[in-house]
View 1 (cartoon, one colour):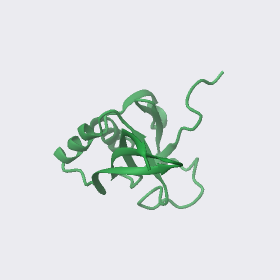
View 2 (cartoon, rainbow, N blue to C red):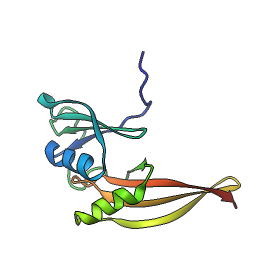
View 3 (cartoon, rainbow, N blue to C red):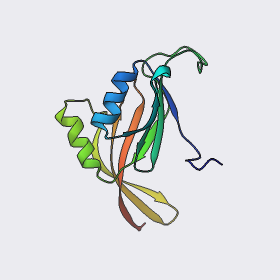
View 4 (tube, rainbow, N blue to C red):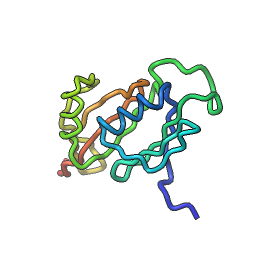
Length: 137
């Protein structure tokens, strides 16, 4: 019986080593498992799981061109978004949208989060965010 998340994105990447360096050393993901012979890794961060696999033609539905994943962003909830943000800044990694506080209305409440946007080495847009509470509209 499958007991993992019910949606786990698998991202095609141009260079598995470069992507692993970004996700592990900058975003603090951990390797849950990998298949080096397939240039594949399952990564975890808190409750988030993501698969990355070097482009091999198997999953291709069309031509891949940078930036990959156009039209989608992946929100990754973390416990301390500022730590990751500072790590990226310390490594002079480009930030797409600087750290900010945002409030989103859901019915009669506002839900807040600190968040920033960054593109991974292949151009996938990632929104790293931390919950900062709720308030009435």
